Length: 602
Image (cartoon, rainbow, N blue to C red; front, side, top):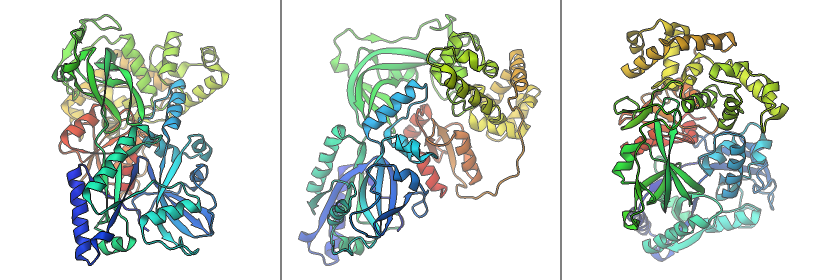
C-alpha cells in the first residue's frame, strides 16, 4: 500500500475549516453527525518506515522513498529495540511508523561527536535518518533509535478473531500485538474539541522525551474514511497541524566574533542556555552588523530565540521592556582580534551578506586555521578524524602551516599529540592518503576561494579539465562557463595569479593529490528534476554535497550557489547558514536529504 503524505495546516482557522467541511461532507453522505469522531495524535519528528511481518515474523523494513518504492533497511531495523522481531499472534501484516531518536540519545551522540572533533547533528530528525541508513547495522544499534507505530497498511491484522471499525481500535490492537504505538485521543465532531486536543499536545511538547513537530487529525471511522477517499496525493480524511517554530526568551550574555576562512567576521551570540526544539541552545549566529542594528540587539538583552527551519538557532528580536540600563551596544573593533591588522568594511562583495567586516591579512592565524578545517571537512577533501580540535592540535604543535603540509604528516609525530595515540594516528594517515583521490573539483572547492563553492568548482574543472589550466585562464575565459558570474571569475583568477598558489598546487601534486579531472563515460540520465533549480547548504546526513549535486544534475536538475526567487528548492543539512535564512525570507521551499531521495525515487 502506498505510503502517502498529509495535507499541512498551519493555524487553527485552517484546522477548523477541515473539521467543518469534512463533517459536512459525511453528513451529506448519509452519516449521522453524532457518530462522527476525529482522532488526534502527536506528529513524531522522525523518518517514516514500513514494517512487514509474515506469520508474525519481521521480514522487511523499508523507508518511505517516493511513497511507492523505498529503501530496504531491514538489517538496521532489526537492531532497534522497540521493533518487535516476532508478534504475539502469527498475523501477516504491514504497519507504518515513525523512527526517531530520543532526546537523551541525541545529546549523547552529539557529545561523543564533539569529543572526536566531528560536526554535530543539527537535530534528532537528521540524526535518526542518518543512523537508520548506516551501512553497518551495528553502528545503528548504538544510536538508541526508537519507533512509534501509528497505522496498519495492509494484511490480515484482524483475522485472529479481532475486528475494528475505527482507527483508535486498530492502534489498540497493534499495541496488543507487541508494537509501541502512538498515543491517540478521540474527539467528537467539534472543531473546538479538536483544537483543544491539538493545543494539549503542543503544551506537552517540551516535556516529551522525543521530538514532535505537530499533531495529526484523522477521521476515526474506517468506513467514513473509505467514503471520503483520497485526493491526487493526500487523503481527504486527515491533515497534519504543523506547530510554529518554538520560541523561548533567554539572556544574551555576550557577542563573540568568528573569523571565517575568507576573513569575514561573523558575530555569534553567546546565550544563557535554553532548551529549544529538542536541543540545548547556547549560541546563535547574528550574521552581520545590519541584523544586530535592525533588531536592536544589545549585550545583556533579553532576547527571543528560535530555530530557523527547526535547524539553525537565531535571535528573532530583543525585548527592550526588560532593559535596566546595563545593556551595551555592540560595535565591531577596528583591528582583527586574531592578527591585529586593520579591518575593512566590505559592503558590496557578492557574498550575499550586507555590512560584511573583513580581515584581509592572508597570514591571519584564524583564517589559516579555518582554511585548513574547511579543506579537511566532509564537503571538501573529507579527511575523517581531522576535525577542528585535531587541526588546532597540529597547528599548535607546528606540524602543519598550510593544507599542503597535511600530506607530509607522519603517524609517529601525530601519535605524540594529546588525546591521539598510535591507533588514531594510523587512522588519520589512512584517511589523508584516501583523500588524495578526492578529485580535482573537490580540491578546487577545498581551497576555499571566495565565491567559489562546490557547484562552481565542479563547473570550472569540468570546463578546463583540471586545475593547472587555471594558472593561464583570464576572467573572460571563466565568465564563459554557465553559472560562473563576474565576481566568481574575478576571485578565481586573482587566487591563481598569486605566486604562493602555484607553489601550493605544486606541493599538493607532488604529494600525490589528484589535481586533474579523470574523464568517465557519461551515465544514463533521467529528467526527473528537469526545470528545477537547487541550492545546497549545510552537511547532509549520508552524502556529500558533491554527491547530492551529481544526483540532481543526473536527473536533469540545476545546482546554483545562491538563493533567489527563481530557486525551486534549498536542500539543507546540519549547520546550514545564511542561504537557509534567505530561502525562508523569499518563501523558497526547504527540503532535507530524505525528501530529495524521495523526489529521485531512491
